[in-house]
Image 1 (tube, rainbow, N blue to C red):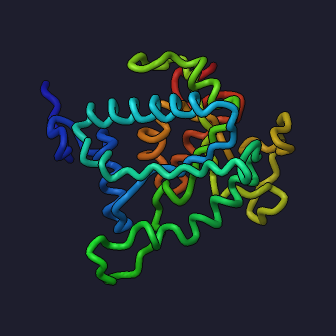
Image 2 (image 1 turned 180 degrees about the horizontal axis):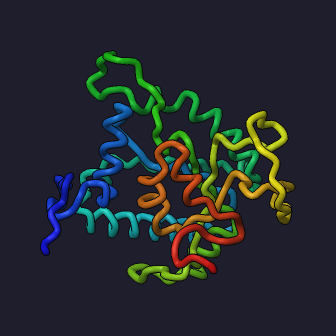
Length: 240
């Protein structure tokens, strides 16, 4: 029997919209009244500008390839690549340092970035549930090496998740500072001094961090569903 979508995608009418990442991002933006999207990237390694340029090239390739498959180039045109790459501030920076800077940036950036282009005041711009202001990407030396040297070069697909980046949750706080936290009977190896299961960041496949791991991270439900404690990398194929 031929499948008939209940909520057809306007880009791919043969499928439901929620299977189309371009549709999902578009609806997220409409719900928040936003006009741009995309994770902010923090560069925290500066040993090779050539490797950094190659990282950005590979990231862009997989974004274009994904959105082409969804007939969603129009959404890609609304993407804003924001990279913090001041070596005096971020060279070798740890996750807490990046999180603190991102929190401060996000607090005001959404007002400047999401103002209507026609200059009209209208309703007050809000942060909403946009992943752009909830999570950020960190590329440290290990992540950069994994993408440029361990993962296959495009157009090949990295089926074994060799290339990854850090995805940082802005809202994460240590368990001892969270009055709602419940005791965890399990013991975990410390990561940056954190012995909890959720350390506030995870490794994401670089080729899908700006697509699948963006469209699925509106609010915090996606984080809770997909979270994978390092050193494992999120997403399939899953370890047994």
